[in-house]
Amino acid sequence: MTANTAKPLSSQSLEDMTPDEREAYTRQKRAEELAEQAKLPYIWRQTLEELDLTFPIPTGTRARDVVVDIKNKRLKVALKTAASTVNGGDPTLVEGELFANIIVDDSTWSIEDQCRLLVHLEKQNRMQWWPHVVTHHPKIDVSLIEPENSKLADLDGDTRAMVEKMMFDQQQKAMGKPTSDEARKQQMLEQFKQQHPEMDFSQAKIDL
Image (tube, rainbow, N blue to C red):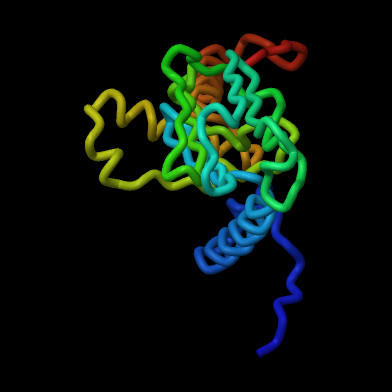
């Protein structure tokens, strides 16, 4: 077996890829992301509405042994003493600015089996994927997120259409292409130009 020495493909060229090339790019990108995410002190998952973090902690840890400070756009999770940390490391597991605002009153934390710390965050913007939890941690490519079809099927027609539009627009932005709204405005402008050939748009500054 020979190593893959092909030049990595950028997200800007996704539109030019064949299905096989796009699948290979997606696999490569996800493998790189998994390697980066594996170095974090937590495992996280998200839906459009919420985000959950799981921290491994020393067996026997109780609520009184931890500090969890959840703010509108900031999170701190720490163990109270360095002696109680895994391998005697830094007692602060994570501290930093969140990617986006959350609903503090609906966000919670708990300890499971005295060996896992669970933090649940409710997103304020419930139509947005997060590329990372805190801003100084590695990002994932949100354009590669594929929600389960069953979850999309559970949505009502209007909400599903909104989610699919949002996903399309995120993919368009990742490829440097216009969003659906921008494309619609551009189409309307072109139609207007065709209907009014006497007007000169060469010096016009048009913000789409």
